[in-house]
Image 1: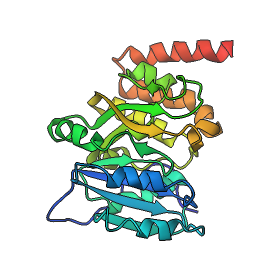
Image 2: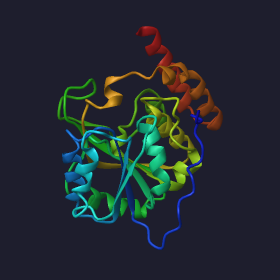
Image 3: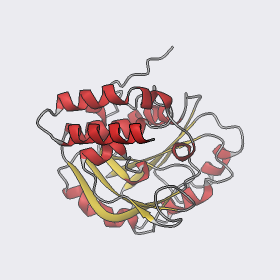
Length: 264
């Protein structure tokens, strides 16, 4: 059995030129809803990016659909092999990424506008942060904002310990992911939440006042719970506190979590 705990990303090949962004799209039997996702990428006015589709051996026409986009997405790489779920698909894609920044887009989500990457690019080129994030528009009924509303805003570590940043709004440096280790496969639904928490403790993060993506609340993390993530919550919070002992945000979040756990 493969290990599930985070490990350094496998070394990637040295290349003479690097795109600014590697967009990773994990898929499995996504043919029915993936077209708009690829359309939103093909429509970008900023072209300094590549697309890595990491497919879990789909059987429904997903691969054939992706191939039709090659004329509109010349920097497209398609990887297809069995995987152990969405986070394993992302992990397997990372060594193929050539970009300085890694962005994960769900196969049923879309970049918000054709100018999204163009508006982000100056910030990414100038930023000294390891993680840059914006907001999303949630396209259907959900528990956070009215349908079609904007979700996000600046996060503190205390807020992040109790509420996740939408992963479709997050750009992470490849070096940061390599330092933190791959997505932890123990967490079937919220491995992105775990890695965001570790990134906030690791170093500088930056929020940008921009809607990055249109996020479908029908996605996996909106519909399921992660028992292992919840079971290890207190141990992970303690480890974060140990790594950042002078921060009052972690103990504040611990008190908040205990209050909500007792209340609900």
